[in-house]
Length: 400
Length: 205
Image 1 (cartoon, helix red, strand yellow):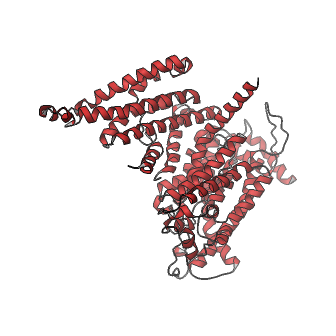
Image 2: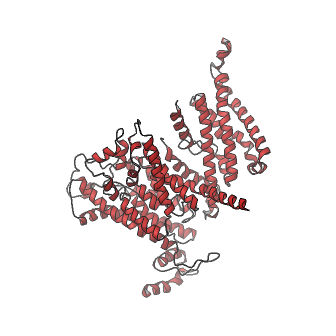
């Protein structure tokens, strides 16, 4: 450690004002604070003494994301073999998973990081730590089969339009990773919508052209459930032969889907880490699940005689399908784009769950409602906060 | 149209085909009057009120006076042959201007502070494209009376929702370090685009 610190100390003079490499100070600063506690003290009003800065804050999120990431990588391999009706050992699963997931993560970090660096150099601010999270979140919410150029476009959109034009980390209105995902969703709708194969089947990288098992569709549980005929979403999930879409299995996550979102279990582990370290708001997470339950129950009560099969589906199925849990834990709790007041967080979370289930059930074109629900509430969060604050002011004033 | 159909028609007009975010009508006051939530709410309500009244009113005028053959209720064959639809614009605008004048008088009386903060944009509701646009959509899409009433209300509500939301966002963004070239209207256009994307959430309901 001392050795590393010495390197930084001896090189610092080149990067500080007047040094030869002054322009690249943001890059130097990023590396230094990544490895060591920042040498800076807070200027001005804040008087909290703590080694936590936004870089540590964001790193914790990365740690919390690891269970999802590791499980996602394993699952890519698992689905790959399952699609061919084969079983393999764990290492094979991981190798196939890494083969597919690593390029996605690398492209996401490389493209996004380049934009981040460009903005940091030109606008002379520090490199924003937020990208460490965004750059990992996005690979986890795209299907494993995504073409890398589409991913690169989406990352650029998310980082530049979603964040940098607003002034960088801490100032954006929408969650940048979700902005990027929504960009993919609307720009390349046919490649990414629910019924397209979400399983990596090998393509040209396998030695021999193995064929997928007959009847394998790779459709996500959400697609199956929303296409089910009257009153039978659960039955058609159960009956889905090529994969096991039982409630338990969907909870564990061995189902096709975006890389990191399939396992509700892994998301809950992440949630525990985030809540225990005080990074994510438990209020938001719990009220999202509550909102989903309320909407689910409302739909159940009007399900009789309707042609929409998903109306009758029990609400807890929504929790384990698609990105509900992942969105609730990692996306909606982004402290920048979420509501900031305590009451506001509850309202914000409740409506995310509510709208997500509403979109899933009622809108056949969008099988996954979580992304748009969170974006919609990101947009509404400032208004909720405004009214909560106004109500507080009014209450205080009336108290005299 | 039964109730559920009307409801989904209304939701469609509020969210995915929002008059402001999808048809891009009424942008000028949207951009100019969206710095504070309170004045945005006031303007939004005023626009919603004017829209709710003028669209069905214009429907009556169009159907019973201007449309081809609209005057057949007079019983006079000469009049029944008339097609006065070239008078659409001037008649619609006249109705709108009267309504706006009325709203202006009411607001001036009830809330002088709101009257002051809206300034020139209050009388300018009369030439707000969202309002004339809605009346013309009503003609073009051949709505029935009930549809046009629901359309006026929901389009107005959608417009109000959009301006209030962006006002809250802009209030929050006071401390944002927006690049120089984008300060003010530039970044507002970006937000408007992203909002339109979020409003697509309700498409198809």
